[in-house]
Image (cartoon, rainbow, N blue to C red; front, top):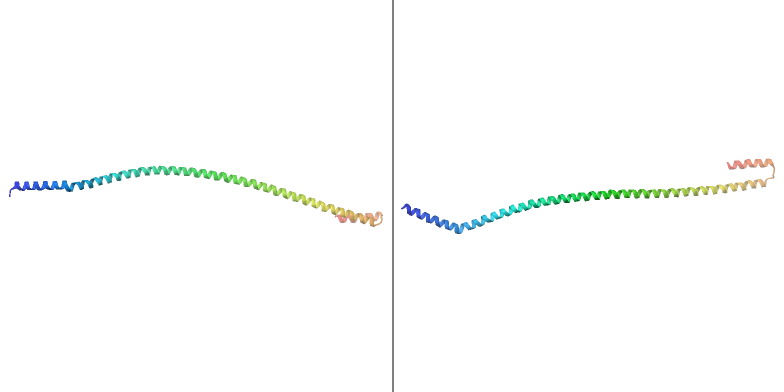
Length: 157
């Protein structure tokens, strides 16, 4: 065998192999590589978008948290103010109720004093009438009058 023939036949076989590879094998490989590159680029872009969205979400959440804290402090301030108002109203109501009770008690006391005075007036009047009746029943004499006055004084005591 001749070396030139072997070399030419190997060159032809190699050329056919290269043509076959370029024609049938290379395009699917290029498509797969391009798809892979596109997927990687899309993944990196998605990752970048995700990182950006995460930063935005972080900023939004901190803003929402600040707003919530501010709102909570406002609500607490309003609650404390309302509690103070309720306490003041309760104090005012209690004072009015106490004044009303004291006024009622004073009125009851005055009524009792008036009733007691009336009872005393009736008793004094009865004693006076009883004393006058005793004086009129007895004969008028100084010794009898003195004994009678002593008896009346003892009844009064």
